[in-house]
Image 1: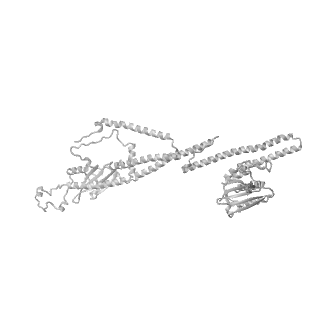
Image 2: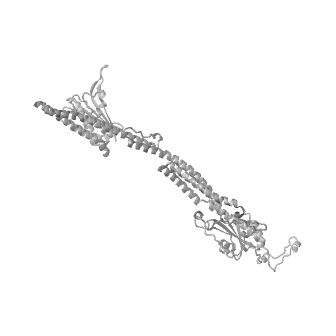
Image 3: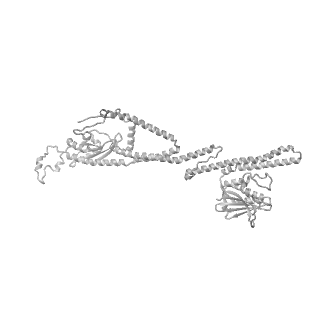
Length: 594
């Protein structure tokens, strides 16, 4: 009995519900995607975070694509399916050959004669005689056998005769009482849509495009299949093709032989979606693993980016606050405990900010000191100028002119020293450090100082090493300025007949230059003050004879060379508990050696 049913007529409620639910399901999906996108935008991920996530996902996607494209599962499944069909085909072909009967008038087989045969007796023609007898494939006898063997499987079986004409097709086999159900196409179903065409194109691309296209040939053109033609020659053959939907079809052809004579061909082929469903199930499992890995990778990437982008953003905000600072001192966030590049960046920014604030404070202090120092001679100069017209005699007028000249010279000296000090940092930053031989430099300076008029002599001595042991990286002109200032300062404090002793000493990692004099020494409370700007303590000289910037500039130059300078007194231990006697001042300059 043939019953033709359709889901649209038997169960209308069940078929209309999915059609109406599909738009609602797609609408909920779009709404969820929009909500997720708004959430991502609201998070305001930084560019660095997006780059980390995208790069990590790109590597994972490349790995997934390679696994799907180069997977051996599909090729192995096709080979196994072909071998299984060959074995199945041999079994079915043997059963079909055994079911063939003799249909000829030349030979008659009597069943009663077979019952009368005694042990060892034979009846009928010999094998040589039978080899020329035809055993045609009877569709009525073969059809039940073929149906029973093929029905449990999803395999299509076709039998061709020796001329390549189709005898039987398992698609057209059905038994008495069977009910055949045919799924009617959905309303409006025609050509495949965009999504389906894209799916077919992707499936064909994964098939690598090297498989021939399967075409359904007519019932009289069985030899159009290459495997059928080979099977008619007595060989087993298999072929792998793809249909128009990009689905893999494996087909095998086995000769149906009786007494070594080919009577026909059995062709077995898989259904269009048989292998592809298994391959897609395997790829779906891989895709699920990929989605889980991608989700984990995104979370880890966001966490990783948070440990990078977050601190960097805080450092950038701190730098922006420093740029906009007006009165308060802004601290850069401290990440130095991280022990990584972010920590190094944080430490560098903090050091840079501290140096910047120190420079700003130094400039402010320098400006205040300059204003104060310039104000004193200007006040004195103004007073003298205002008093000059009131002078009643020549002596008063000459004294006032002398004050004016002294203040002008003092202003000139201050302006020169201030100009030198203000451009010192910029000059040291612009010039490249070069090896400076301190030994040769001191020899030249001491020789020049010793020939100057005066009763104070200058001596030079070196301790340890040869000439190459006294090289330092730096600027020879600025170092010469420091040593000249120290020598001249020592000569100015030394009494007549005194000696200024300059000593060069090479230690392990640095070079010491020591300048000793025979002067009164330095008051203990002034050992650090003498290096401050505009500080001067010269009781033996008149007021305004010195700007007080010489030692300050010297310390600035030495510190720019990575060294240090300090002062102390040379003392002679006193007997008993008397106060030790000061022999003179000592200035020590330490510079890093080459």
